[in-house]
Length: 439
Length: 99
Image (spheres, rainbow over the protein chains, first blue to last red):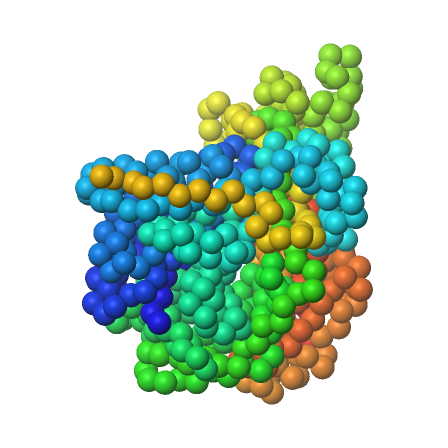
């Protein structure tokens, strides 16, 4: 069976020629990952995509007609970057626009994986919530403050939609591997091989030389092994690249954790079949006794105003700790009667500074944008003119690159939930729907 | 004594999810990997990153002559105190450890 990965992230682009080459032979499934938590909590909170609409539309416009022509179900994971209902709607809107423009008709399957606050609190109270890091224990008030929480679904809901005959599947927050493992397991292939292949393919042509997340990868799965070969003839898969891939962004290179269980690569074998193709065998899947889903939630922490500046004077740089303390105390004193307690935080984000100039971002997050503005203005003016022993450059301590010097960044989100929950069914958070598009 | 980075072909840091930071050290030869493996101490990593020693995982991945180091981020990605959302510029304290 042949499965094609469009690229490592929908909207990052790929070579059109590589796509045509991939589809010059029969393709059974097409997939693409559309999301990641890498860009941080903002996108889940704001409901915005971190990928560009125009770029996403380009990537889909070329690929969608090919998938339909080959009757290859097209699976898109973690729509809109963060995979909430808002993100799924955003991506669906683009797909419908393409369908109208290109006069396409297909059965669209959708998986939503948002969860309610009450669901998470029930898990917490029922002792079914598991911390992933000792530094980030589950917290009742953080759960309650969450503006949006999604669950990272695995292969189960995608398989449900394949059973229903979906031609295109838009998935909310999903494990990256589920996109490629679901069709393989649905077709009856070995789970260990399916998950291992999926883990490599979800990054597009990242496992090839020259490396590229922004290009097409081809996977061929058989009963005893799978093979990977980039579609673009300028790239090749090598044993080193393919084997090294499970190091990337993973805490353990031998184990891939999934909602269904764990894929163990301890006995995986990697062989160079020809100049551009690598064969992998021996990966084993062990089903978990207790099934878990990962939840990701964010809360709004306020509104940000920043002021970037540079100190070039080496004497000023040497006194930075004193200056920061002076500024912090000054702001505290000057706001104690006018601003509510705990209504802002200041962080001085410094870069460089040892025997060189020092970059500073005064980073203020206030309960309101006005509070952040007030605090930023006080901090900036105090720092500009802060005195210290032996100061010669008495005109000002800071080089501002911009006028205005202070910048509104807007609402700020932080992760409030990033935990596993024990589930009775791997479908319990998924809302599955199908509809016919076009005609 | 050389800096750790001078033994490696690739030395990088990256989030392993927003709660963890992971470091990949890839070596040209098995000998280099084993040489470093024997001498790299958790105690030293704990010191330069100000984390608890027992929170640090070190796993050798001989298939590609590499060592992986993972520990929880103190400031998780995107928290108000964080200065590196992707965690991909956290490797220099490790790179400068003398071996």
